[in-house]
Image 1 (cartoon, helix red, strand yellow):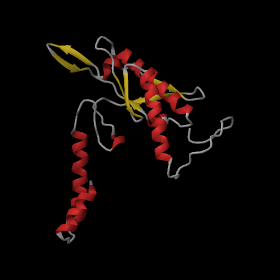
Image 2 (cartoon, rainbow, N blue to C red):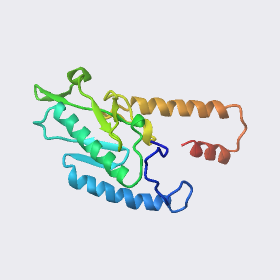
Image 3 (tube, helix red, strand yellow):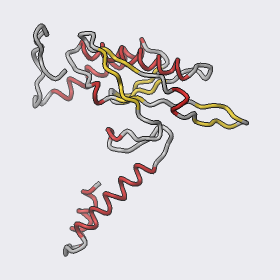
Image 4 (tube, helix red, strand yellow):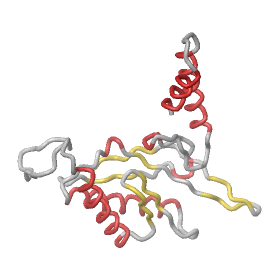
Length: 188
């Protein structure tokens, strides 16, 4: 939720625009990440935007998804405890599962686990379904269009579009060499 509702406890202190917000959130989130790591074995959480669930190779994709759901719920509880909000509508999950075949590992397709879903409850007990994103689709929330399968085509297409847009803007403009260089550096 992004607003106070009746019955909510009003939290004082941090407001947008205060100069020390970033430092305070860095301290808070570092502690939350440490608590999450201590209580959620099998999940590696590098930052609040990316959760990577790993499971021993004997586990099924079903167990991996259950693991992700449990640990995502734990993360939601942790951030609620410090007065933050989890924007469930911005969340998604991706799963990769491999099948051994003739000495090679082949990525299993989504239809191998179509019935799997992840639901997370907010602090009021209302459950939200976390959207599934195909494992070959990128996560563009971090500035790069990276796919769990290491597919780099979306990133290449994004960079090509940026370069095309930049070149179309400057093709009829008269620049000194130094100005053109600054323009190119600022675009990225």
